[in-house]
Image 1 (cartoon, rainbow, N blue to C red):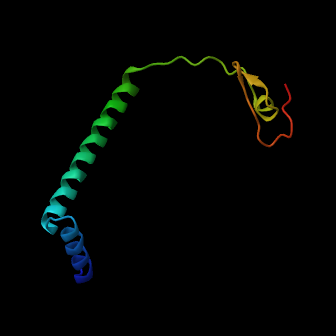
Image 2: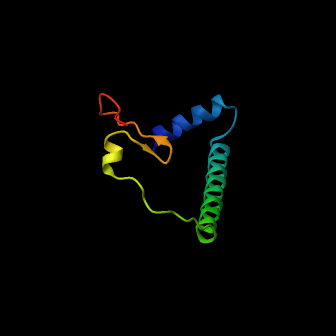
Image 3: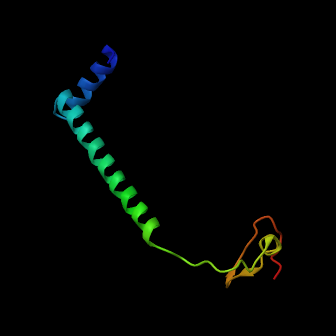
Length: 87
């Protein structure tokens, strides 16, 4: 670490009434906690992908429906590039 960065870290430590070593320990502990949470979340997502199955029916809409702002599956599609909605 360069001397200017270390000097700035010492100032932060003084402002927080702690030491640079403690700041580093807390940062590393937070990094490990975040990594653990991320890995746990990824494991849960992978488990969901392996176990959850969903049936998707045939597509009943096309490009024209999207372009012209028609209702799809009961949801009105609004094309922001149209000046008026065609139904």
